[in-house]
Length: 299
Image (cartoon, helix red, strand yellow):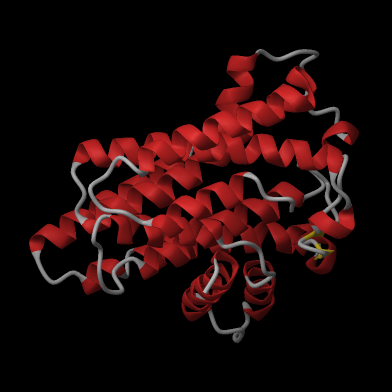
């Protein structure tokens, strides 16, 4: 099979893992669960659970211990998308080719759906404790849970979102501020994915730190590519409105450096990330191809 066929198979698997942990749509809270599932099962690349599983395999991980964390990270990612699309944030009406959660369920219910996914994520990740068969595995799960909370919180994704909102009111931001936003708003969850995969597989601390750096490079390049696509792509190709950065007067890497320099930086970071992934004794060629694919994607 070629890369695309393998990617499709693995994406389907990641989707099945997520679906397994999503709640049943019943009870007096049925409406919010419907909104949660609407967002979570709206498609998408499932790149974070894929990166997590492939990082787990890179370090010799086996079994289903990784699956609760795969689902949990995708829940956190989707809660952030629900909130990003809200009128008080980016005010977007379409994502992945269909109406955003707040446009379908109202902004109040969308807030609750995001909150619901965030809380369910930690409940889901904690299920890995029940799968642990020895004290060492319990410690790995605890470490992975700590990574998840840190990278998703005020010192990770939420910190990046905070700086991003504040940047909208500034006439100019520095490259340092912009990279802080990208590192935390985008790269942090990719770091969580690749670090957790390594941690649960029993990788040494030095290897976990190297994976954190590789994920940083992948995440920054991914976001710069996203900024490029916001300028060069279309709603039909991208599945969400283009030009929203300009509409919201948002400063991006592209507005600071231009398209050509931005493309060169994407290429540089991609190469450096691959060199890190190739430095480990274990090999995972699919993980390397996946990183390049995500960074150079057209949608």
